[in-house]
Every structure is written in structure tokens, then in C-alpha cells.
Image (tube, rainbow, N blue to C red; front, side, top):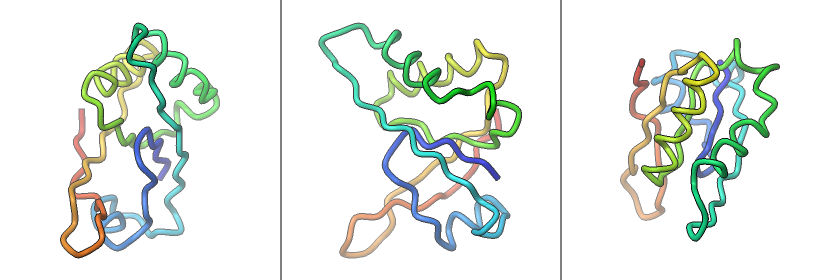
Length: 111
């Protein structure tokens, strides 16, 4: 399973394995840093981030994406994928309990 991550680093753990129905060693994660200048137009910045990935080589194999936490950027990421003709599944994460702040995968949203 190939996951493109536009958010905080994903920890391969039991929650991710459970949600994806894949063994952890079968999950490949590509982290794409998202740093936006809010004083400039967001659309061209997000398009640049998505296209920087060299999606042509990955596009047929992308199983899911983790969206950026900033809602407007998340919408623009989905739009950039839609324009390319492929809207992958979305992995939703939620805060896990415990003393240390951690986010675990909780569901895959199929679009």
C-alpha cells in the first residue's frame, strides 16, 4: 500500500495496520512537507507541492493520502488530484490517548 502523507509524520503501528488491512512491511509512506506562505495565494503553492512529487510515476499506485491539517490546503490537495484524474482514498487520523500527543489512523474514507 502506498500512502502519500501531506501532514505530520505517520508512525507505522497497529492502528495503521488495522485500518489499512496491510502488514506494516507492506506499507510505503512518502512524506511531502507542506509549508505555506499565508500572505500569498494558496492554490499555486499547493499545486506546486502536489506536482513536485513527480506524481506521474506514482499516480496509478497511490492507495491513500493523508491530507494537510489546514482545511483550505486539504481541499486544494484533493482538487489537484481530481484535476489529474485520480482521487485516492483519504486516511483520517485522530488524537490517541496518553501522556504523549500522538495521532493514530482511525479510518479510510473512500471517495
